[in-house]
Every structure is written in C-alpha cells, then in structure tokens.
Amino acid sequence: MGHLSRSSIIRSPTDSMRIILTSFVGVLFGFFIGVSFPALSLNKFSLSSSIAPNVGFSTLDGEKTRILTTSISNSTASPNLNVTSKIWVPSNPRGAERLAPRIVAAESDFYLHRLYGNPNDDLASKPRYLVTFTVGYDQRNNIDAAVKKFSENFTILLFHYDGRTTEWDEFEWSKRAIHISARKQTKWWYAKRFLHPDIVAPYDYIFIWDEDLGVENFDAEEYIKLARKHGLEISQPGLEPNKKITWQMTKRKDGHEVHKEVEERPGKCRDPHLPPCAAFIEIMAPVFSRDAWRCVWHMLQNDLVHGWGLDFALRKCVEEPAHEKIGVVDAQWVVHQSLPSLGNQGEQFEGKAPWRAVRERCRKEWFMFDNRMTHAEKAYLSSMGMDPHRS
Image (cartoon, rainbow, N blue to C red):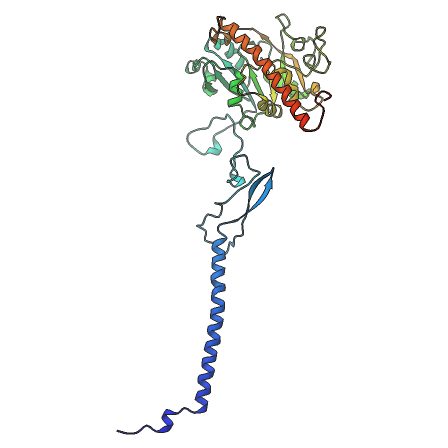
C-alpha cells in the first residue's frame, strides 16, 4: 500500500486564500439575501393589507364617523379581491353610508316598468306632474271626469279608502294609474306614507286633491302655466263663488288670472299679509311645487290625519315674502261639492253620529297641530337665545 505524499494533504497558501475569499463572499451574499428577504415579505404583506382600507375617525355633528382611506396598487393587486368592503361615506343618505356613492339611488318615482326587455327602453315618456285623489268607488264618475282634465303628462295615483280597487278597471285610464288601498284613511295619512319627497322628486308639481271637486272649468296644463307665470309654490284653483265659501281668500275672482291676498271679514286677519288674508289656501285641492312639498311633508304629523290647521302653517314652507309665493288661480276654477263620503266612513263614537264624530276629531287635530307648532317654534327660538314673544 502506497503512502500519500505530504503535498497531497497540506494545501498551498494560494488555495487557503481562495477558500477564505469564497467563504467571505458566501457570507456577504447570505447577508444581503437575509436583508432583502424581510423587505420582500413586508412588501407583499403591505400589498395584501392594502386590500382592507385604513379606516380613520373624524367628528361629524358630535359623533365619531368612519372615513374610508384606501391605497391600492392597480399593477399588483389581485382583480378578484373586494376592495370596497369597508366603505363608509357620511354624505350618502342615512343608512346607505356603506355603499359607493355612484350606486346609491336616493330618489324614485311612480313610473310603471315592463317585466321584460331592456330597462332603458321601458319608458317612452316620463310624466312631469303627479295628481292624487283619495277616493271611494261611489264617486267613480266624478273622478273619471276629473282625471280626464289631466293630460298624459301626469301620473295618476288613487288612494282607496273603501278597499275597492279592481272595479275601477272599467275606466281605460285606470289600467295605467297607481292604486293604493287602505281602508278608512284620509289623504294626509296616505300622503305621509306614500308621497315621500324622494319618491315624488321627478315631478315638478304635486296635486293632492279630494274626490268631490267639479272640474268643468278646469284644465291642468293651463293651471300649471299660470302657477309658473305668477311664481306660485303653493296654490289651489279658485272656488265657485255661488257655493258656500269658508274663506274669502279661496273664492274665485272674476277677471283675474291669480290673486294672492284679499280683504276678509272684520277681525279675521291681524296682518294683511298673513292667513287667512294672504299666504293661504285650503287643503281640499292644494298644489305644491317639488321644493315646497319637501318641506310640507316633514311638517305632516304621523298621528294627525285630517290636516286641519295645516293650511295656516303652509306659509312656513316657502321663502319670504310668503304672500307672494302662495295664491289662488282664478282662471282655472273648480266647484267644491261637499260630499260627506269620507265622513260617513267613520263610526258612532260616544253617542255621536259617524260624520259628527269625524268632525270633532278634525277640530281636535287642529288644536293639537297648532299647539305643537307653537311650542316647537318657541323652544327653537329660546335655544337660539331669542325672545319667542318678540319674534
């Protein structure tokens, strides 16, 4: 067996330097790899974290409100990840803060849509005005005559207080009207629940009428032209003067297009620019602009359904001077037939006939509404450091 030479075991100095240099380079290379690896991991983690937006807090009206702040790299983020799961937009309508603003449909309408086809092709035209009648089937012929005074530019909405709806299909126009039924309710009960300002927002004017109006001398399109011409935000057609008239303000004036103030009986008006001498209409056949109705709807009380007293407060829903924005259209007039149809829907109460019990409820609501309005305004003025009596 041969012997290994010494030179085969002991490396030369050159080899040793090579080993040392290689080791040093390896360590240095590993160091750089070690330093770079956490950075890469953090970058990846930061990208993933950007999918869930940072949510900060700010103060809005005394309450903490979440504000969405997101930072997303479009070049590297996965397209399948939901980046909007933490949206919070305080300016959205109440309850819709978690939705992206562009998807929020805050307003609607009464337009009828098909069940098939392209939604964009559903509507050949969009009515600009809305007329509502609170009706019982016994007054169908009267309503038929009234509806025919309104063009196709109107959406027709019937509130049925007697529960009879399908019978109205004997009229062709009824098949394209909207029918809402709730037994023994008044038009203001319906209006509060079904005429929210965001639902009727597409309509320039909203007519909220009783069922007992004679319309032989009325044309709705002509009425709107005059309301616009004279800047009326709240109005009504003039009433036939040969019938019993409660207020002089609502009586038709011959030879006038519109009137906005009158002389009442002595002692009725403490100010010539205040109701019932001005800034006043009655509630049997009111017409509201879109903006005025948004205010009036909020003034309607949930539990007060007859509307008595409302006519004296309507002036609060238009800009000053109110007596210039509220008036009666004389050139388009109606006859108030005073049919006790809804009153007969009442029931005998405390020994009183149904219609009399309903009338007493009307008077009680007037007192309650006036009382609430007075106290609410006094409380507000006091909170602002103002003297309610002086104001």
